[in-house]
Length: 318
Ligand SMILES: Nc1ncnc2c1ncn2[C@@H]1O[C@H](COP(=O)(O)OP(=O)(O)OP(=O)(O)O)[C@@H](O)[C@H]1O
Image 1 (cartoon, protein in one colour):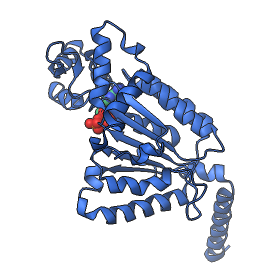
Image 2 (cartoon, rainbow, N blue to C red):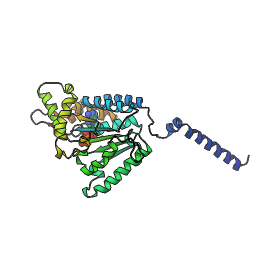
Image 3 (cartoon, rainbow, N blue to C red):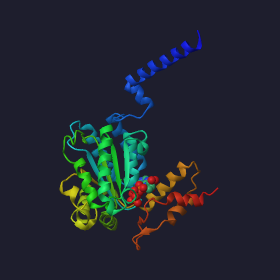
């Protein structure tokens, strides 16, 4: 057989094989990332498992997030996208949990082409460019949801976001069946903010001072605390009451400040993640080096679990 016809035969075989793969989405999606790839039941199971295993000191978060995501994914007739607002002190796990949620829906997690992250001070820094940002953000959200209905949008530093920009997101979170032919009802929006952290800490501290267990704090106590500090205070710089008045946020998720024992758990995980042998002395020294508040009782870590990894570099500097 001369080389040309052999080459053509091979090309033909490759083309039909490729057609075969494309015509079998499961096979295609085995090799490439696909929208709605992971079955919803699997998503909920992976989410529950990872939050139980990886998240420390946030019993309310585990309950609310799994219930919210599971309920949303199981609801084939959702009337609006899922909107979660995560509130709490720095370093308590808000970004960490949004990463876990992303990884439960898409194997590639935050690197998935269906997951989109925005940081207010990075992506929308200039107040005078707000109209440009609004147009960009609206076309970005519309375009990505058109490509994949189960798109995930994560907005960090919401308390630093300009009010007008927040209003541009509103239509996507509302109860429209279609907006310009696009349905947003399968999309998920996660907002992260430090707003309300003081109030959340006040409730946690009150429990501690009255000798009550942290784990006995109920969501209702936190919701009331958040409403006082965030929703009723129009100057919270948070939502400017736009999304709240219209009840477009489905769940407010409070992150409690982390205690010494949680910081030690973070240090241990960090040491193990690097494959180092856990030296209990070093672990304790790193946790002791962190600063704690209030001044008298020194209960909660000022930086949560942040900067633990940097401290590790210093102690395990081979
Ligand atoms: N509750 C927690 N359980 C386990 N690890 C945690 C927890 N909180 C924080 N961490 C660890 O600390 C790192 C930083 O936390 P993260 O970025 O989630 O903080 P944050 O709440 O988003 O802070 P900020 O408000 O400053 O953005 C995480 O990547 C994780 O490794």
